[in-house]
Length: 113
Image (cartoon, rainbow, N blue to C red; front, side, top):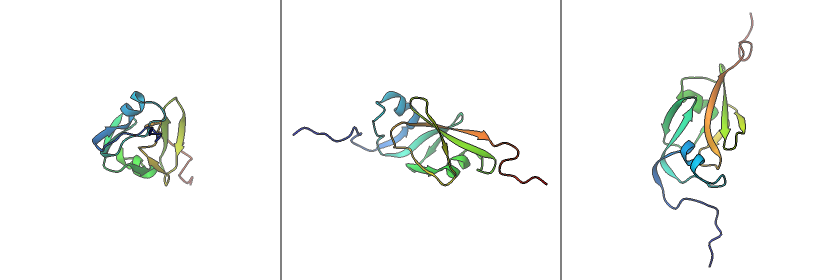
């Protein structure tokens, strides 16, 4: 009997760098389970034990907050998506590569006196 399951890794890894995995595997390949995931936010690599975090939690890893910074998710192939503060991002989802922060305009997220 032929196995027709989606492409998936068979075992849990100790740690997985999602950017490296995404670049080295087919776009439809789901990332394996891991005890820790290495994610890149701007130029910093962070090691996290969860397979998903919210936008706010990802910003906090690099000492930033939603009121002052926007978070973007880079997908394999060049697509860039806005990540909302309460939006959960799965690091195992196919195509997820890395994250970037950008300061909000001075008038966004603050009041003008």
